[in-house]
Length: 253
Length: 257
Ligand SMILES: Nc1ncnc2c1ncn2[C@@H]1O[C@H](COP(=O)(O)OP(=O)(O)OP(=O)(O)O)[C@@H](O)[C@H]1O
Ligand SMILES: [Mg+2]
Image 1: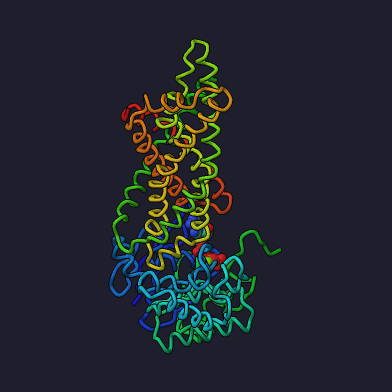
Image 2 (image 1 turned 30 degrees about the vertical axis):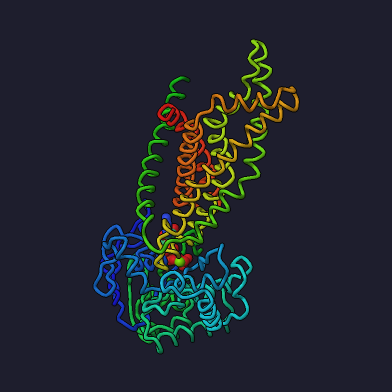
């Protein structure tokens, strides 16, 4: 379904992706873990063609999105829903208009019907009575959930979640995890989620991949990852400051 | 010393050439979206309101006072050689050919152009433009086309009003303060004013409106670096658009009139 091959991306001098290989099956839920600044968001943006790689390809059902022309790229994007790390809600539109944006624009659904669907999707992410607010009136966690509602509103085949549970309280985070698992079970969506939250990763992942120094250094089921012998991965999942991963600027004495 | 200035001038020129290239490409990419579906009538009307209708109060004040001061200066100046009866012609010709379009262009740039650059720039740095793309919506079509069309049509419309208001401003001063006969003022207005003066002015205004909107969208679209970047992009957009209006005004005038 999604095939990432030998992906390279630098910003100026900064090498971010240095040969990423990863493939995700149809209906599979892949979780990408990795340190802050390791390039997870950059990687996920390549999957939907927001960034163009310096080298390498990303195949979506056999089509290389890095080489598509504009028109075909937009066509492929209709299969996707994406939640941004910072939610990226449209400031100038009401919450319900954000959520039903795709439906109104591409499915020609009437505003009245679209608002009903938006309200229903908002309920799925635990929000009630916010549909007429402007995004600026929401808290950070609420914005995140509106972003999630917007991503799932048109029932896409592929969902990309950039940190779906950060900024939420533990109970709400777990409810969102359940929602993600549910979408996968009921609608058989293929998903790629980025998270720092290992509890959430174990819960939603079929497989977990770790991005480190520009490459995927390990992939495996949650159980395989828990019992990994790779010291880098082990340090990351146990959340220890001591180990092979060095934090820049922080030196141990 | 002189070398330094030449260097700085060189850098400025190369900056403008680089920007010009970017803007031409951006324009070409935008215009390709003009005739694709869906046609965003609602967005276009909203932009026409915000660029056109809401700029009217400032255009009104500027135009009426410009017409007034113009009448005042020409009257006192022309009186020295007994030509004060020509005030109406001078005001009418300069408003329609020059001041109407240019002043309106500059005012709308400062008011609406800055807002365009800041809004689109903010959308860029908060990933709202990326979000549009993930929702299979071309941001050039969704954001730039409505602003471009609003600039293209609303600037001439505002200029018509500006011309009328300015000429009336001149009338207020000549008739009200200098007690010139009002029929003389209006006769002189119509005696020398040709239709071409009026609508060549409008062609200029349309060009100013379109280029102002495109430049401000372009600067917003390629904003980098957070809130500071938005500030920078906004300033550059206003400077670049104002310069473009003033420079292209000369060449358009030389070509049209
Ligand atoms: N548009 C850009 N221009 C320049 N550098 C960028 C850009 N986007 C990302 N980077 C750089 O790429 C690196 C990876 O960024 P990315 O946002 O992918 O990190 P991340 O793994 O998502 O981190 P986090 O967990 O903190 O969100 C960072 O060093 C960042 O500075
Ligand atoms: Mg990130």
